Image (tube, rainbow, N blue to C red):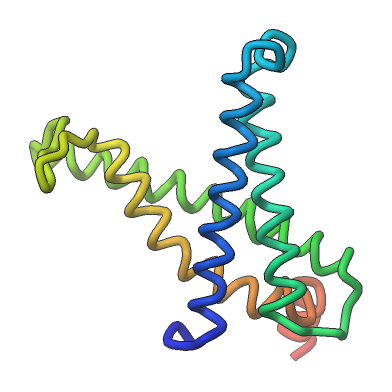
Length: 157
């Protein structure tokens, strides 16, 4: 499942969505005229929502071609799965930071000449791990029959 053209495309589209997320957010919170009226948290939220929509749009149009449900229904499921991924990323990252502290690893950690904060390293690691959850869940639910249908099948046995 993870050694496929679809997974590689999913990774590329996720990277593009991340660039949109960061680009939109940074523009909103760093351009003086905009930043004066848009609070930082809202700029980040708009960036994240923009990235989510780009990710969904690219995967819907070019990577997953499920026609059994409307685009709106698939988007709703995509959002639920994505929120699950956000929660999972936060839990894993927090656990990794706790593990680093328990093991006595202190910031900054020097990697390839760079001084990196343990929180940043944990965030990157958690994001990488959650990519596998996201691909599997979006394949099984978002761009497929959906959560409700899967749950109904599971509980009707």
